[in-house]
Length: 204
Image (cartoon, rainbow, N blue to C red):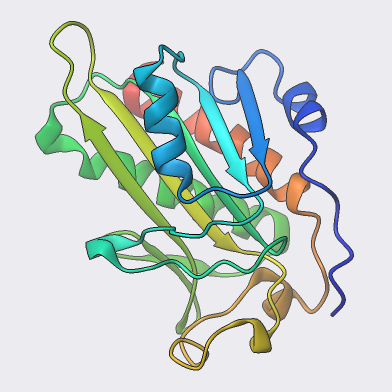
């Protein structure tokens, strides 16, 4: 499977998401240490709710419990979202559930693939991990807390792209679907589902 995929063009993404809160501003970085860290920094600088930052490659992506998220350049979807839900810090698990379910729903709708959530924050197809979610909340003295939700999805990886440590436990949408996938199309579908589900879960 050659890596012949659509580019993550911010203009294309933004045009497809007009009128949404989530995706009201989109940036695509060629490389980032962590998209969660990038969004947190923008939040400190005053960026508003709905900001989404994609990275074509992450050099220090984080998973649950500080585990590293492997992400070869140009093959995964790696992005984080800034939201301000009216949640207590102790209720942050609800954000993980919201994002993970949106990923599962989108995979099922686009590819008719039976994906499932493996609590607390992983998405599996059959017995292999295809995606993960990392939600982080920061308390605010005034107004709703800041929350950053990072999502990593294996899209166009081939088996050889996974290190030996995870090769037997990881998969990608392309491996399961049998052909390369337009990352931008998947990103748009997931952000639309996140918007729909956010309105229901957090009274957008």
